[in-house]
Amino acid sequence: MNTLLEDEFAWFANFHHKPGERLRLAMLAAPCGVRAHAIRALDKAKVKWVEAFTGGGVTAVVAVVTCGLAVAPLARRVAPPGTLDVGPALALPPLGRSKVALHSRISDAHARAALRTVAAAFRSMAPG
Image (cartoon, rainbow, N blue to C red; front, side, top):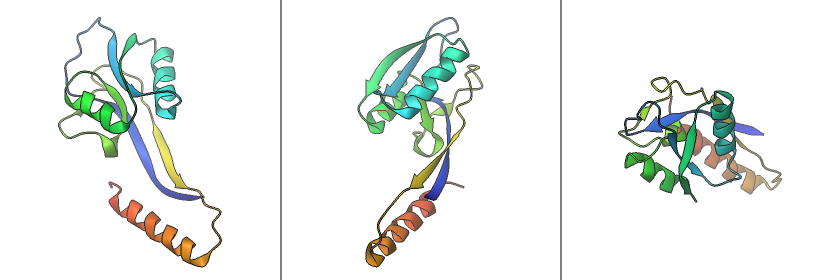
């Protein structure tokens, strides 16, 4: 296993949540691991929520967040410009970090060299 980077996750939005209302969420469809983790964290913290949007890809979820329609659990590196981490302001549970890793069983020397190049490029684009 080759760890490429660690993602930090948070609750991103571009709107003002009204106290007392259910938290409007934009998430990927199941079986997304981030979705499952976010739902468990909200339920454990007894935060009332409603699924306002279910997207088939991160781009769709990011578009909904950018338009100010919902809050989304996202990795900081994919959070759209103009959005804020609203977790602290809304007393939402922390989502923590996750490792992004490359797993490969390739034994061919040329293919392994290509994977090392891809891994280096990925790391060079990582924030921090």
